[in-house]
Each structure stands twice: as C-alpha cells, then as structure tokens.
Image 1 (cartoon, rainbow, N blue to C red):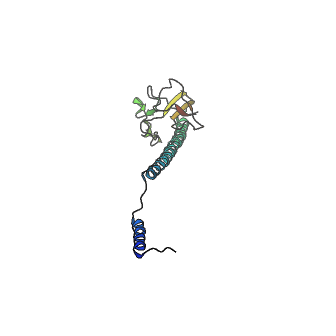
Image 2: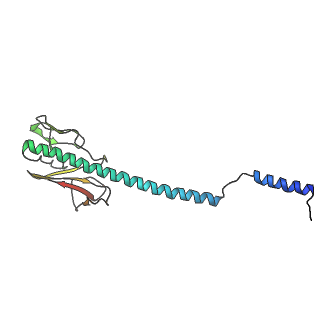
Image 3: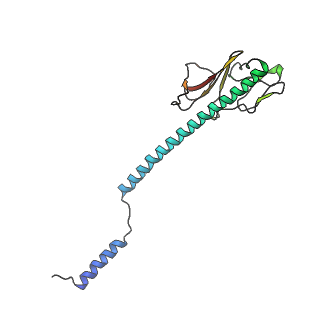
Length: 178
C-alpha cells in the first residue's frame, strides 16, 4: 500500500483549498449566450407591448366615433339634418356664431351659435398628429372615418386611393355611416 507523505498530503489539501477559493466566473461564451437570450426575449416582449398599445388606440378610435355618432344624432333630432362639413378639412361645420359658422376642431367643444353644446370636447384621435374625417352625404346621411394602426383588425378596411381628409401613416381605416 502506497501512502502519501505528510508533505504530499498537505500540498494536495492546499491545492484543493486554493482551487475552491478561486472565484467562480462565467466564460465569455456563456455571457454572450445569456445576453443573446435576454435580447431576443426583450424584443418579443416589446413587440407584443407595442401591438397591444396599437389595439388599445384603435379601440379608443371606435369608441370615439360612436360618441360622435350620438352627438350627431342629437343634432339631427334638433335641426332635422346632419351638419355640413368644412370645405377643406372634413370637420363638422357648425361651431361659433350663426353668421360665421366655423369648423369644429377635434378636441374642442361642439357648441352652436344658439349655445347648444352637443359634445364637449369633440373627441380627438389618440395620436395627436392624426385626425378623424366627417362628410355629410346628404341631409340624412354621413360618413365618419378614423385611421386604424392594426391592419389585422377585422372591422377595418383598406383606404381607397386618393381618399382625402385623413391624416395617418397607415392605409387601413374604420368607417361608420348613417
């Protein structure tokens, strides 16, 4: 039987202790793999978060158009026709004094010359640089349109070429008619 001398045993024991005291660290490859995984996961989460925000803004737009429809119905019940649209920017015409009816800005009050307020504020697109579009087709009908961000929205449709009056960066729209 071979036995180690006390000196050899002490040397072996010191090596084990010295090895166990070395700080454990990640290799460069392990760090790169971990960073890559974190990057991929954060990209997926961010993409889903942005898509959820787009869907939420689209839902807000649809709700806004329903509110405007209610105000238009109240106006129709009082006046007997829907308000005309402004000549250039497809806004509801009928704010201000009767002698100088002006277009109602989205986000401001829709108050007539007689002091009747139909909506305060007249809802505005959640993206400040976008707008809604109103067009009276005749005394008894109109269309109200909003841009949609989420093209997979089943209630939307493609915007026709040359469609004026909407400011948005997509070609997908939601339209309500009366």
